[in-house]
Length: 561
Picture 1 (cartoon, one colour):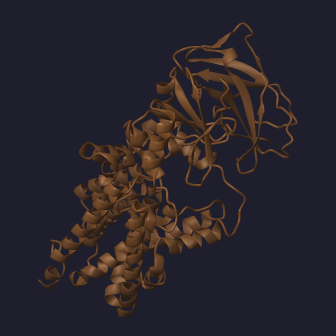
Picture 2 (picture 1 turned 180 degrees about the vertical axis):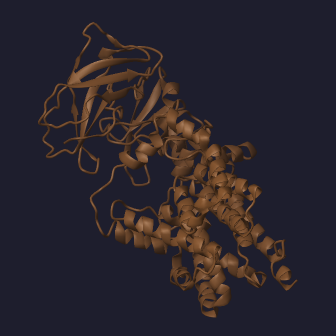
Picture 3 (picture 1 turned 90 degrees about the vertical axis):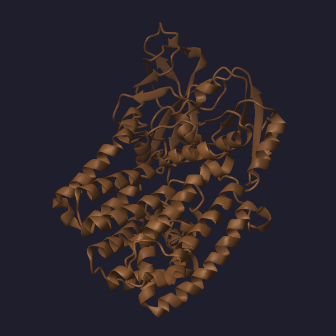
C-alpha cells in the first residue's frame, strides 16, 4: 500500500499547475515571436503534405499543417510543438518511479526547464521537437515492455518507434543504443513484433525515398560539403556544445550521470543512450562540425537521471536548484528578447522578418519572386507576404526541397522578380541581417530547367584522361526543350566538395539530327574535361543552364581519380 501511495496514478496538482503555466508561456511566445528561417522552410514543406521531404522525414510538416488548421500565422506553425513540449514533460514525469518524487515537483521543472534547447524547443517547430517527444514516449513504453511484455505494449512501442523515425533520422541512434543496452531483446519475439510494426508503419516513407531516388539519404551521407579538420571548430566546438545544451548546470548534470550505476535494464538503457549519443558525435567531430541540436536528444535521459540523483543527493539538489534557477532567469530573458529585439544582445533571425519582407514587397511590388540560392529567404518572404516564391539553386549552393517539389513549375512562363547575391550590376533591393547586399531585376516569361538530370556512363574519371566521356541528359518535363536554350557547365571541387572553379563545358551531340531534349526522354552527348587553373581538383559536377541563369545542380558530385 505504501508503494501505491508513493506513486499515485494521477499527476499531483502542483505538477499540473506548473505544466499549465509552461504551456501558457509557450503559447504566448509562439504567437508573438516571428518565425526563424528553418521554421519558415518547414512551413514551406507543410504547403504540400507528403511522406517525405528533401532534408527530413515528414513529422515536422504534419505538425505545422495540423496547427495551421486551428490557428493562423506563427501560432499555427508552432501550436503542435507547444502540445508536444508539455507532453514530453508529462511523459518524463510518468517515466520516473522514484519514491517520494511528488515532494520534488518544483525540482523536476527546474531540471527540465533549465536545459537550454529543451526549453527553446518548447515552442519552436523544428524536427527535434517531435524527436524529443517520441524519445520520451519510447523510453516510457520500453520501460513498460521490460516490466510486463505483452502484444499490446509491443505494438504500441513499434508505433512510437515509427513516430521517432518520422521525426528525424537521428532517431536511429535512440533505438540502436537502447537495443545495445539489452541485447537479449534480439531473442525476444515481442521485441521483433515491435520492430515489424515500426517498419510497416514506416513503409510510406521508404516508398517516398525510393520514388525520389533516396535523395535525402544520398545528400546527408555523400553530398553535404565539409571542410578540413580544425580542432577548435570541430572537436573543441563539440565540447562547447556539451556545455551549451545545459548551461550553468552542466557540472552537476554530468556529475549525476557519472554517479549513476546501471542496476536495472531501464537505467542501463538511459546510460547507454546518453553515453552512446555523446560518444557517437565525439567521434563524428573528427570528421565534421557537430551542430548543437544533433546531441539534444540526450536531454531526455538526462532529465530522468539527474532528477533521480537530485532526490537522493542533497549536494546535487542544492546546486541544481541554484544553477537551474539562474539558467531559467537567463533563458526567460532571452526568450523575451526573441520577440522584442531591443532586449536581445544581437540581431537574431526571429527579428524584423515581417518588416523586411514588407519593405521588399513595397520596393518590388506584388507577384512571384525567385530567390537565387536561398531556401531561407524564399519561404520567409512567402510566409509574411503571401506571394509565391522559388529558390533557384545553382552549382555553388546545395539542393533542397525546392529542387524536388513543384515550386519551379509554378514560376514557369510568369513575369517574376529575380533576387540574387550575384548581380552586382543590378540595383540593391535589400540587405539581410549580415548586411549582405541582394540585387534584383524583373525577368519576363521566366524559364528554368533545374529538374533536368545529368548522368555519366563511365565509372572512373581522371583529368589526364581527356575522353571523350559519354553524358546523358534526361528531360522529365512534359514538353521538349530546344537545345539552343541550354548550356553546360562543370564545377571542380576540393577534397571537401566545396566548389572552387566553374567553367563552361563543351559537349558534342551524339544524334546530330536532334534539335531538342524530348519530353520524358534521354539525349546523349560526349564531353572532354576543360583545363582549369585550380590545382588538384578532387571532384567534379556537371550542370545545365539557360536564359542567362547560373549553372544548376543537375548532375551528381563525382570523384576524380
